Each structure stands twice: as structure tokens, then as C-alpha cells.
Amino acid sequence: MKPFGMIPFFIPHVGCPYVCTFCNQSRITGQSGISHLTPDYIKKTITDYVGKKRNDKFWEVAFYGGSFTAIHRDLQNTLLAPAYEMLQQDIIDGIRCSTRPDAVGDEAISFLQSYGVKTVELGVQSMNDGILVDAKRGHTAQDVVDAVARLKQRGMTVGVQLLPGLKGETWDSILETAIAVIKLKPDFVRIYPVLVIENTELADQYRSGEYEPLSTEQAIKYCAFLKEWFEQHNIEVIRTGLQSTEELDSGNSLVAGPYEPAMGELVVNE
Image (cartoon, one colour):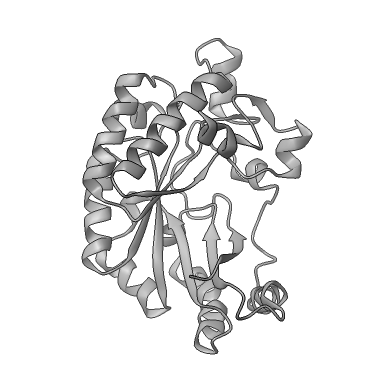
């Protein structure tokens, strides 16, 4: 197995029909807007990443940050076409995207597959409906069940992204999510303890005393349990904790919460 080489393109907020209480993608990624994501820019970025290392890694383009299948079909086409061209030329090995559980109907999946997309990551966050409502996700736990089943029926690789620590989270809701996710049998999971980011409703709730973020200790305990639980059920946890960025490290965007650049290591130790 070759090491994985991800070529990420961030599309913050594009396509999202809701504004979740915790979300400010531009702050998290350090990027805003997508006007720079022209076909030429995408192809040049891919070429720069791969360079002379074509055979060193399994290279995969990843469209992250928004709800990819919820954006206008013309824009999906503009973004996917140059990546698919590079896939056909054997410059990369795969294409993946992240999206919402309620935005992957059969037509959307067919469109992705026509461009060679084989992996879809779903922003699930929690499998507790009360938490999902409070976070203003706009989808239910059943939407997640249906989406994963539909993707797997179509032969897609499916990832699930979880956000332990949303308002109302307890050990009971963590257990509820853990049990529900193994029933889905996703191919992999990412775990991101909730951070309070500036210019979000969650930041307002924190400042008013309505929301208390996880301590680092509690975040590590939740994540360690989830990681061990999923791995016991043969589900790979490919990331724990947000990737370090200049924006987060500067402290300008981070209001509160368990931000640890070495979260993954701390969780493994726990």
C-alpha cells in the first residue's frame, strides 16, 4: 500500500443550505470564496502537488469544506472536470468530496460517479436528533442512515465525520452516536471535538453562558473511547482533531474549546 497523498481544495460554505451553530468554514480553513478555483488553477495545483512523486503516493483530489453535492450542478462540473481530466491521464489516483447526508440522492451519486468520484465523506456530527436540531444541522439521524446505505449500495467508499461536544452532548449521546455509527458500517471515521470559532452562533452561546465547551481532558476521553470503539469494530479512524492552521494557531479565530495540534497523539496515549 502506498502512502496517501491528499490534494485538498476547500469550498467553504458553498452549497450549504443552513448555517450551523458551530460553523465558520472560512475561519477554520483560512480561506474564503472560491473564485480562485478555476480549471487551470486546479490542474496546476494537482501538478505542483504530484511533481516528480507520481509513483510515491496514492494521489487523491479532495473537495472539502462545503456541501459539495448541494452546490449548483454547473459549479460541480467546473470543479470536477479538471480533476477528472487528471484522473484520466493517470496523474492522480482518485477524487473524493465531502457533503451533507441529505444531499446525496441517486442522481447526485450518479453525477459524482460520472466524474470518477469514489469516496464521499458525510458531515454527520452526531446521531442524536436533539443535538442535530440544536446545532441547526437541518438533517436527521435517519437521513444519515439512508445516505450511507444509498452510497454503499452504489459501491462508494463512505466516510463519517463526527463532532463530539456539541451543545447537549453527554456520555449517553456519545454512546448513542457510537452504537449508531457502527451499524452504518462506514469505511472510515474522522473525529473533530467541537471548537468555538469566532462569528458563529456557538460563540454567542458561549459568551452568554448558554454553551460550555469541552475541556481538553473531556475531549480526549470522548475521542479515545470513540476511536477504540470504532477500531474494535474494524472501522478505521483516520483523523482525530482539526488540522493545525495559521488561522487557528494565531488565536484570532478560536474563542474557546479543546484545540490541540497534537490531539491525535494525546488520544492515542489516552
